[in-house]
Structures are given as C-alpha cells and as structure tokens.
Image (cartoon, rainbow, N blue to C red; front, top):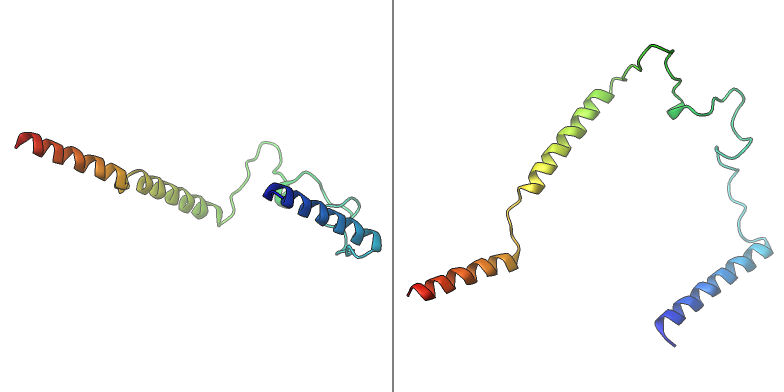
Length: 112
C-alpha cells in the first residue's frame, strides 16, 4: 500500500470516528455559544464599531490615546532598522565566495 493510500485511509477512519462519537453524544458540548453568536450580545450593544470605540461627531477627528504615538514611532523605527540591516548584510554565501576565489586563482595562474 502506498503512503498516499495509507494517509487517505487514516483520514477517512478519523472522520468516521468523529461521526460515530457525535452520534453517541461524546462530541463534547463545549462552552456556551461565543460572544459573536446570534442573540448573545447584551442589550444596547452597538454593532459596527471597531474595538467598541464610538466614532467622533462629524467634523471632529479622532484623538489618539497615550500609547499610540510611542507605539507607532517604535514600530516605524524597528522597521527602518530591520530593513537597513537586512539589505546591507554581507554576502556569506559559500558558492559566491568559491566563485570569486576560483576566478582569483585562475587570474593568478594565467598571470604566472
């Protein structure tokens, strides 16, 4: 039996075990429905607001919280440092070094 056939047989048996367990009632009821399930949110909940933050009145801009400016500065600085470091790394590829070394040795041999 090939590896692919054994793998597919295992997958089918796993699905069959799961179906049999759910028929026997052993699938585990699990916790209560999640917060996002229909009918579980409290009265007065406003949908469509990001991070439960109400939008500012028309004509006004959103005020940053205390942590936002340092976070953006730190994230931008880290991005610039990483980009600079990763683009200016020395070439340590063994194949490239061997090619340069071979060319140098061939040039020495021809010159001699």
